[in-house]
Length: 125
Image 1 (cartoon, rainbow, N blue to C red):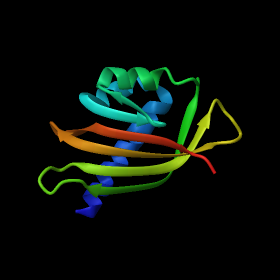
Image 2: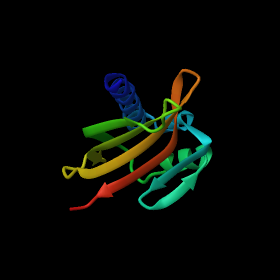
Image 3: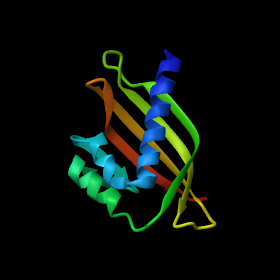
């Protein structure tokens, strides 16, 4: 079971960050009206508001470099997942990457998953 969870989490993480780094407008499809994003302490609810927040972040270019990823089942009855990610964020080709952590709660839907909860934080030393 763990390997299946790790596979799903890995595929999701790869897709999410590739999409974020290349075309943030493509992230809207991963959220629903019931989804919530906590971004640096600000809570944003609903797919449209989340997509607007992500698309209007104040940088032109970004690259996520995932350092760790962990995944666990989040329910005994539904094939939902908790996915925790840490890594480095290179913004506008800055030589000083930022450390970040992000947690996703993924809910199954029609053979795929959507993001029900998304918590993002920059980690300052």
